Amino acid sequence: MKLSSPDFENGQPLPSFCAYGAENKSPELKLEDVPQNTKSLALVMDDPDAPRGTWVHWVLWNIPPDVHTIKKGQTPDGAVPGRNDFGNTRYDGPAPPSGVHRYYFRAYALDQILNLPKGSTKSDLLKKIHGHVLASAELMGTFAASR
Image (cartoon, rainbow, N blue to C red; front, side, top):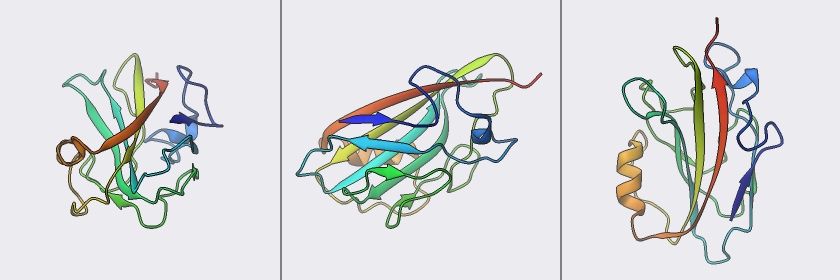
């Protein structure tokens, strides 16, 4: 499985529209080579460089397996949003306090549709998908603190 974006290359800076203090819109994401027997997809975006440990920016599950593009600033129909570390059930973009941070987007192809309530956390999701991941893919973008 492959995860990419027309908005940034792996390892390169995220566009400014993604920032929490700007448009706060998620980048467009492309999923390729999703296993045929996939029942649902899940997505997590987090920042391992946050001062107090990994900061979760976006959690989604039950994305239909035929979704190959997640459009800029949108949640796919049928997807269930989890609670991020801002306390919201939506995408909230980069807002690093200092320096350059890395932002990892991880997609998971799952062999089941998840029975997980809206607002569950990344931790809840990872427990629920344990043993049900058919494939996964990762994409990383960077973002620098405003001066």
